[in-house]
Amino acid sequence: MDKKKFHWTFWVGVGFLIAGGISWAILLAGEGPASFVEETITYSYGWVIFGIGLITYSTIRRIVKSKESKL
Image (tube, rainbow, N blue to C red; front, side):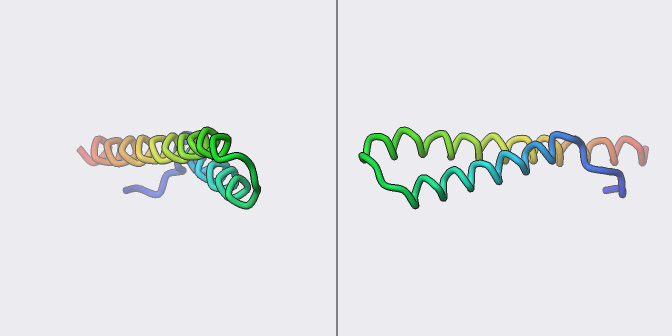
């Protein structure tokens, strides 16, 4: 890969990973009914999965662009 800057989707993905991790940590540190924890933790997982998806998309896009520029 070349030394170009990362696409903005990479940094948004990192932000979603951080937000999901913080949300998950706060949720596990607190107390509440089991149904509330089960429903709310899916949002944390969703944020993390979405962040991973954005980072993967950005990385694949960067690899494809670097291969195209070499041709």
